[in-house]
Each structure stands twice: as C-alpha cells, then as structure tokens.
Length: 260
Image (cartoon, rainbow, N blue to C red):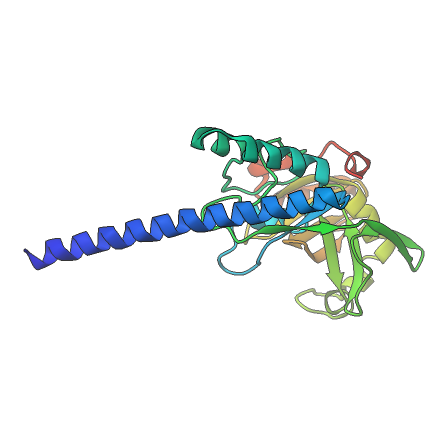
C-alpha cells in the first residue's frame, strides 16, 4: 500500500480515536456534575458556583462563567432533564453546547450545568452564601476574605468577583495604584449596579460599566481594575464603549435580588 495513503489512514484512525475519547470525557464530566447536583439535593444545597480552569486553553464561555453563582433549583431541573432524556437528541437539548461568552442574562433552562462544550474542564461546586462587613462595606460571598483579598462579592450579574491586595494596593499595570482611584465601598457599589457588559477590545478580559459611572475590567472572576474615567458619566460611558467590542455588548436589566 502506498506510504502516503497508509499515513492518511493512520491519521484518520487517530483523529477518530481522539474524537471518541473526547466524547467519553464529556459524558464522564457531565455525569460527575449531575452526581454533585443529586448529592447536593439530598443535603439541602441552595447554590452552586461555577469553577473553570483559567489558562491559555480556557474558552470564552468558561472564562465568562467562572465564579457564577447558580441557584440549585435551576441546576436540579436541568439535571433531571438530562437524566430523563430517552435519546441523544433529548440529552443534547437538555444541555446545549456554547462557544461564546455568556454575561448577564438569566440562564436558560438548557444551560448552566457543565460541561459547556467539547473537552470542557469546568465544574460546579456547592456553596453557601453569607454576608460580611469589611470597613463598613457589606459583601455577599461564599467564603470569608482570605489574607490576600480585599473584596469578594457577588455582583449584579451573579458572578462572585475577587479583588486581590496586590492588585488593589500595588501599582501593577496601573498608572496609579487602584486604591487611590476607587475606595472599596465604591467598587462594591459598582459591582451592584453593572448595567452593560462587553468583551475587552484588546484581549479576553470582560469590561463592565456601572450606574455609578465606574469602568470595571474582569479576568474571569478576578477584578483587574475599577475606576471612574471622568466625572462626566457620559464621557465615562464613551470610555467603556471605546475600550470594548461594543457590538457584542450585553445590557444587564435584572437585579442581584432576583438571584439571592
């Protein structure tokens, strides 16, 4: 047999093997997440947190979902739809795949439980939401602040955002240290009043604009920066538009109270 043809056949067999390995991994991942939901239902879990691996392989979808808090009722209903599916078509309809980012809309009934796409590494873990007051600022979060954090708060879109001490007090990539641009109380107010979200024009980060005129940048659940570009709210919003892929924006219309 011609050597080139033999190589081609081997490549095709290898590709098919890789595909079916990926399908197998997907099914295993889905069943692992379903098991987490089933066990949580027995123990009265009320919320789950999406945990994605943030690295060079992270998809837009998983990066945007990382840190999202999802009510148990939503995932329990989706989990039941997956388990009750009678065929592959019904199973796919109960858990759609998504490539693009997902921002502030209320989750559709067929989306929320990982995996979100082929070879997805994201999972959900049970969490309990509490409130702590730090320096007079009330923050809703799933665990107390660590020694390396200054803010951990569930924002208006339902994602738990984290601001590290290094990023807040150090200069980092900022022209001025972040703590000189925005007090913690204003950052939390900004997180509570996000009205528009869009992908950053230069990288995989996510930009947001708030009712109190703050421009916020997220890398997954990490708060990269948060400041008011100009005292004029209109000019601040223009700054957000220019720094974002504005044609892909998402307008946030619901309140965090709807989630919690």
